[in-house]
Amino acid sequence: MSARRWYVTTGMLVLMLGGGAAASAGLSPTSAAPGSASVDAVIAQVNGQQVPSRPAVLSKRIIGHSVKDRPIRAWEVGDRQAEVTVVAVADIHGNETGGEVILNSLRDGRAISGVHLWVVPRDNPDGVLRGQRHNARAVDLNRNFGVKWKPLTGYYYAGPRPWSEPETRAQRRFLNRVDPDYVVSFHSPLYGIDVYGAKDRPFARRLSQEMALPIKEFDCAGVCHGTLSQWFNARHEGASVTVELGSDPSERYLTRRGPRGLLAAIGGSR
Image (tube, rainbow, N blue to C red; front, side):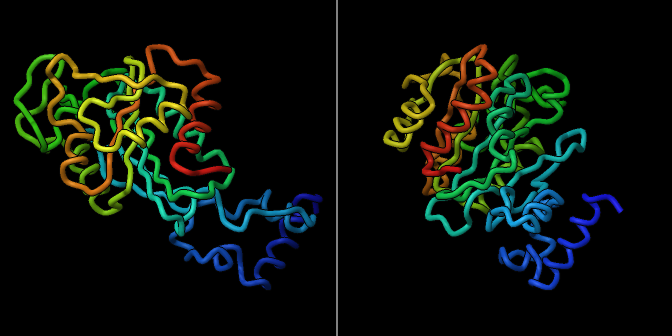
């Protein structure tokens, strides 16, 4: 028997006798994310090394499906007992993928404290795979929400009616269920924290400071209608802020400064 297999077998017996990793974290087997009690964690515990008291990813959920039936996934990270709940969303425009890198960096195996956080890294999977702004029906999803919707055409085609697209309906259901204190919606190629019609300017300023992005007002040349932030700010007590990452953010920013700054702005750490 290899040393690794011996460690795993022995470690599993230790955990079973001790009540199990999931039970010690207060999670049922179905609510814990697959792989949260990893082989490496078992080996670390057998070796006497410190193991986090809770997994880095608490759960994973499919919140809906795209036009082409691709799953839209959300990961729950952080601390469920925290006072503040945040949902961070990226790729609502499929050719604006910098935010996805930031959000994926927040589920890299290190536990997050101080905030209850959900991340939706790929809100428009069909658009991402096609390398296009729109979904598979050529709808700009960030013009399809049901507040201030207008029948825009062309590049900003808003769909035949509000909520016509499965992706926006999935986001509505999810946000209504979670009802977060804050939503952070990632975009590009503009550059800055958008405070045009902002509901919570102090939060926007924290994002600006911690993520090293300027405060800006983006009016979208008059075509900002039916956006995620407009809908959430009108229908929920919490506040949504749009973060524009610029046309070419560096890999270092997307994997280090961006995730670290976002966590600091929402009160989290790891």
